Image (cartoon, rainbow, N blue to C red; front, side):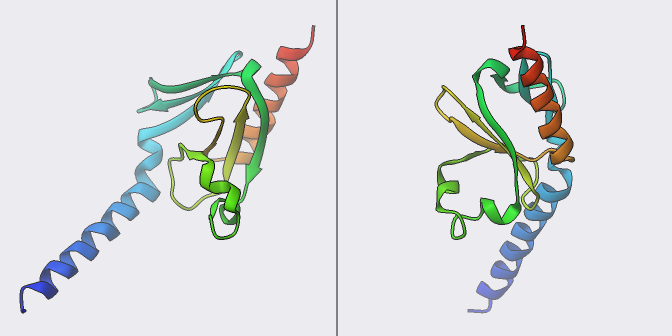
Length: 127
C-alpha cells in the first residue's frame, strides 16, 4: 500500500513534465513554412512532414483555443491536429482532397500566418 502513492506521484510528475515540454519546446520540433506553392509542416525546421498545395486549400482561418475543445465545438473532433503547442490559438486549413481534409496548426503568429497564406492564395489564383 505504501508503494502506490510514490508511484502515483511519479506518474503525475512525469505527465506534468511532458505537458510542460510539449507546450514550451514543441515549436523546436514542429515548425511551419509558407512557400509560393504550398504550406509545409516541418520537423526540426528542415524535414518535411506534411505538404499542402495552395491549389488544394479551400479555407484558411484563425481558430481560438476554445474552438478546438470538443465539448465546445463538436465539429473539432474530426480536425487533425499538427500543432506544436497544446494551449494556443491555431490556424484551421481545410483542403479539397486528402485523407485529413481539415487540420489545425499552431504557428507563433496565427493572424500573420493566415494573412500570408491568403495573399499567396490570391496571387496563385490571379492570371
